[in-house]
Amino acid sequence: MEATKIHSLAEFLHQAELDKREVTRITAENPELTVEDAYKIQDEIIKIKLEAGDSIFGPKMGLTSEAKMTQMNVTEPIFGYVFNYMKVQNGGSISVSQLIHPKVEAELAFVLKKDLEGENLSVEDVLDATEYIFPALEIIDSRYENFKFTLPDVIADNTSASRVVLGDSLRKPEDFQSDLVGATIFINGEAKAFGTSCAILGHPALSISMLAAMLSRKGKSLKAGEIILAGSLTEAVRFNAGDYISVKFDGMNDVSFHVV
Ligand code: OOG
Ligand code: MG
Image 1 (cartoon, rainbow, N blue to C red):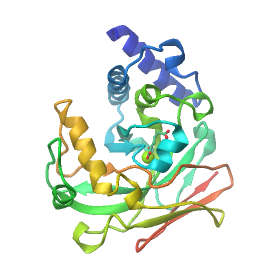
Image 2: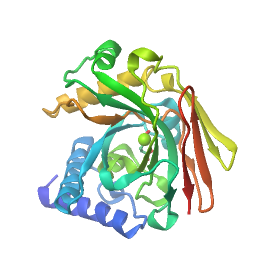
Image 3: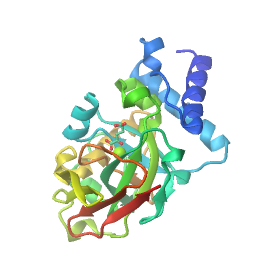
């Protein structure tokens, strides 16, 4: 795909986010769009945001659980980037007027203490390079009509990244079983979705390993100090103005926000 076309599709999706407006998925008019083209569009959106003065918080993995792949009818994990402007304080509020049709996901975040590079990192390699794991919520907000897309569409759209709420329970990987963390999403006190962290590729550390492998094919690697979202361990849940979202994670403090 030509560089000018990549740039114009990136502008189109970036503008949809700024306008809080849903748009037709880009593969409707560009059915030939490949996964490789889609990552180029994502790279271009990142460049546009950086040029506008935004900064990257960290990478995120997506579609790493069966629940998410089934819900979105997509079959491969993907990655994108969370920006600092997307951060919302734990217990704080999110205004639906700033978003299109947001959904919440329960996730675990990894903080690295060592660089990670390679195509075949084991669970042990990843845990050995991890300083802390903590609970987080991701708010995804696809820019596409009805939250419907193909794999290249969602990659190009920076994997629907929109907001993130970080929990405050920092756990050392050696102190707990990070593949056995149960999480339940409550909306106004009612349990709406639940799962266990082994739903993420059998072990959330394998999501980080897969990210390292995908980056390594692009000549990139993960660095000490990076914070990575490993992907949702349940399906994502839609919320509306007036809702109170609180997510319980086994052995960790709740992570919550109000919707206004
Ligand atoms: C794509 C993003 C999925 C996750 O954690 O699985 C994601 C989407 O479902 O819109 O962030
Ligand atoms: Mg996510």
